Length: 230
Length: 228
Image (tube, rainbow over all chains, first blue to last red; front, side, top):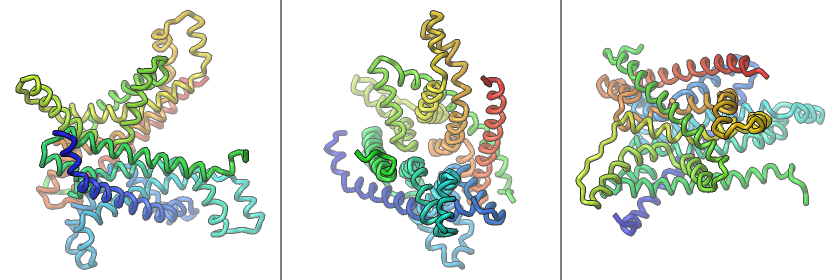
């Protein structure tokens, strides 16, 4: 197996890369948006809001992502009649939808937990100062608490995004042709087992450290008020 | 609720293999972690380079790829090498061994970071007094540093364990009869995939809960013992 031959698979690998990045990007984006209300529910003083959020986060952080994927992709088949009636079956039949659906819920749970910790760690003085300036409720959250929480949550959130990107390789098991899926397909055609896997490992490594770099740059930007002006 | 035509006990029996792989892999990961943490602070540049490459690569590549690379790639590599020397050779890895080694190797990298932090938390006076008493490096590790490092490493190791035990679900794809694979068999046989996988997820949840309680208990017990 020579690497010239591997190069001829570049277009297919790029398609796989696109699916990996697409699934990761979509899940991260929707997951982040959903994580804010989940974290706020968890911090609410109403038990009826706290408990659903608590169990949701507990379940998705306490079980393997692979089980969650199978539960959605294969498990939905058990409710085919009900889902068809609701008009949802055409979605759950699609592996791509199931992958994004599961990864979104999964990252939402982890992100909500990160946000909860960050919101709780917002210095009391900042909140009091905001109140003293006459802010309350939504305005206080928008102007003071959430920006401050975002800053302290950023490093942990970066790790979560990187973990999710790597974990998205599991979608190859539910038949999707992401980077890992393409690799497995190429191997079944060429039998170049370790060459292809090593190449794919290198690509994941490159994406990981590119993400590390991007998140670090944004972190520096978010922390710019703490740096000296020189 | 979990009738599954009598398949439920089979899934539950999968816990045994899940725990066996998990505990063996954790044991391995702790060994890799201790070696890695020592290597990262070693004065030898090459040793340090190896340790840094190890943690960098393992944390940058998905577990699935590493597992496939080891389980399918490694035997192929050995066969190809043997062939180039004129031997005919068939290598087949045992799924239990391959899974344990891969998961142990991966989480060894995470344990390395845990132990590195834990060694750094031991007051420097401890190592200095050991040196002042004329202990060699090996003796100092055995008598002074290793007994204390576990106390500082415990919270971090607990977190590694919680992630590791969930990662063992991956080994089902190389056909080891743990919770996930038994659930898959039950799902196919009963045509109740949701029930089967939901039961599997609850079993993992149960392991997580028991582990968290155990971790809490150990931390309380050890913090009493290690109260300075």
